[in-house]
Amino acid sequence: MMYVYLCSMGANLAPEENFAKARSKLTPLGEVHYSRAVYTKPVDIDTEHDFLNSLFVIATQLDAEVLKMAFNKIETELGRDRDDPECSKKDRPMDIDILGAIDEDVWESVPDYLASAIPSLRPIAHRLTEQEQVTL
Image (cartoon, rainbow, N blue to C red; front, side, top):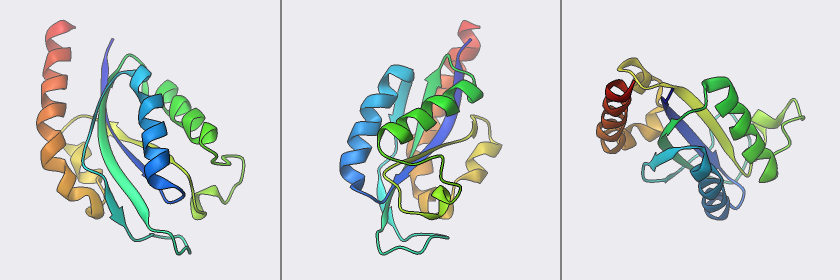
């Protein structure tokens, strides 16, 4: 079975370098399509480093639980200390999240600072979802 998810990624430590590394590690997980990456000010974190953020759509055979474990592994490989209970409030080399399975409501979970990326990804997500419905 194939799943199609809307995801986000962000980094504020060596962000351009870590985005490139993360993208190469995401490629084996499925068919991935990225939005344009944008720099944003930090939210709920005290830091001087701006974040580079992006949305992406992934069509994968991995269910959400296994995919999130793969994302966590990538974050750790890039230097994020996921064992630190405060890791979500600290600078990070990479943060990758599943926003949800592709449906009409998932787009509402996109943070405002990435809303401009929705128009470029929505048609791709729709196409991938239709392909999967035809092949199932």
